[in-house]
Length: 353
Image (cartoon, rainbow, N blue to C red):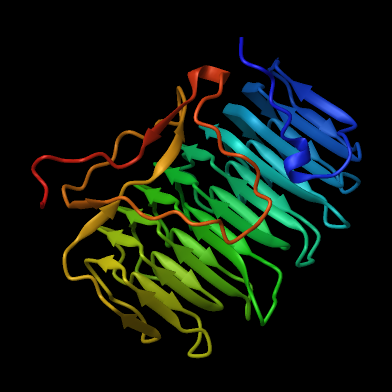
């Protein structure tokens, strides 16, 4: 027997007032409690006309933590969040930790956040965290649909996230709209993978709040495709620094797109096969020998992270303390759906040496 984890205190004070623990749910859950904790649970085959196919948190929810839980085949006929909708703009904050989102989407025209739509209070100290989670095969082929993961306001931190094999019309990876602080980065993607996402519109990663500072550190951005030439694989409306990352085999005609000369993009120690941009990119310390990063991601029955190999030299990145503090523990074993810690990129004997 494995002892039950108590991760609530890693993220939030006090104790949760509502718990969804160690159960399987086949119907939509609505919560307006002050603090909500979802742990070791499976939300499966849920269809609803409400926002948040599996669970919706209203504006009265202050703290929301989802840990070691999976969301399979959750769909909505509404606007926000095929799997999860957190709409707590007054004083709310949340964290997703060890979460698998699979085959979640909206059938409603013009929907955002095919897996999750998350809006928190617009304050620097507010957590908007997705940590050590995987979102895969959230496929919506209807026009007008955007974003597998929609994150708005607060401080956005996404370490060790795998967003892969999703499809929608626009920005099939992630949308970030953080709090604006001229003195600090308020949106960070680190040690994460965005691979094999497909859009029949444009874009994979969108940083959208004008004037905010953004960073991508030690990430793999691989083989994402788009049909139109508008914008790029990575779009920014603020200053963006990309460091120690691998950006390879993406099919957009423009890979890096900035909305303004006031918001430059800087690439440092990255390996890229195309640097096509709209004129606002600076490249520093270019790596001449192609490589990919061996990143470790959560893998589950449906959020599989073992499918990637590009055949380049592989590199194990040094992982320092995360930019965003108090992100909670990362364990190498947990029980739900036989989740295992597996390497996302595996050595390829035919690759460079």
